[in-house]
Image (cartoon, rainbow, N blue to C red; front, side, top):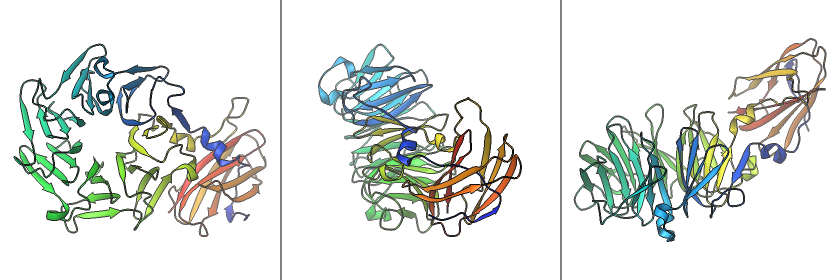
Length: 424
């Protein structure tokens, strides 16, 4: 174990096993502690402080204390209750896309069902629902794309009557500029502007994949695609039109990306089929969250939702809904007396060659211990620090550190604090 390369002064203490630390940041909601009947969760939605989760059998709501469970239209047939999509309109109605039961509207008490028999819905298998800024509902089915004004007007787009190259619609994203992006199974992706459709496939535009499982717009307007067999891809109109990341050319952990989200810092989050959760930091840099790096309980992520506090909610294949309290990685630990005796800041973060620790302590000349762990839990460095006063600033040389995420822990006589930094 190495000593720190320290310039100026330093501070921190011993760390528990990383697996113990990770338990505090994950909460699992599954069949053992909720009314859920199955653990496979397909989709998530948020209505104020209420989380909605669509499962392979029914859907549920969670208000932070209590879970409630619902079956579509009070039916017991499994195909009616395999929930692919949940969208909530401005009036609080829940719109439910099912694997054979059509489109359900649930106002909290009553159901209205739209199917091929009582509407122009092109298929009873509804996989994607989006409401645009003009209050039009876009419905993706296995029989084509429907645009509905939520009253009497329907426009149906299908493969042999439009520019769509597949009727099997996987995802729909509103770009908020009167542009809708459509991801399909085996038909590439389609841009819809007004009534004009342009489809991009491997054959006509060298698209990276003809099956697009999710599509998200970045804060800078960037267009990201989650592919079935080619990782993620960024689409641009100039040349080359695509920038691709997959396990063969990057630290991306899977070739199959089920879901995408943009975090509060504008970074791309990827929920993969078999590689856990991945954040793209830019350039060649990635953050990987899986069991081996942070104790993530499931490697198969079907949907990602980020709440107003920065907490991530993950729809998983085997572990139900997982609450990932990522902000807790940055929080200090308060001692048993309820008082925080020492404070520290880490900067710059992310960094390249060094980090500074700016430390304030109410205990003058208190001895501190510092430890740094990589994200596998390996203790890389530990050392003792003897401050000369109640304020200290130290610099840690990181030139011998490889790129990655590190946990840092400072311990004093009365409290322990933890933080995280990224070495680029």
